[in-house]
Amino acid sequence: MLVALDTYRTWARLLSQMRHSAWIVDRVHLSTRAYQIRHHGRDYAFASLEEQLRPLGFRIALLTRAQGSFASARAARLKVSGMPDQDDDLQVFIDEQDLFRRLAAESTLPWREFDIPDDNVDRAPGRGADWLEQSGGLSMDD
Image (cartoon, rainbow, N blue to C red; front, side):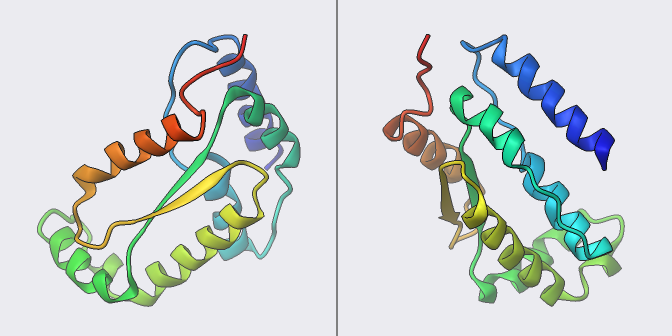
């Protein structure tokens, strides 16, 4: 785990040197925390990383779905899945989504949840970009 923490700090230092670039980073430390909690029963503090990310304008955009929509999402995944058995237990996905909500709420970074009620994932980037613009996430102070 120390390697992961050091890697995240290195990324934050690198990104701080490119302040006028825009970055989308998928879940970063929330995924690490969720994995460690679910598979090893351990939680790690990422406060120091968030202190590095906050001045860089990082935000957490959490895409979620209603519990009732997991079955239709599974049906769509089965069309392209190489391992269809991995999606048999939908409760795993529901529990993981709840964990991500909790972890986002515990974060010191600004965050917002975006519900994808109609499985229209194509609209999500525009909604996220609108929120970033409204919340100051697309402009950097020098």
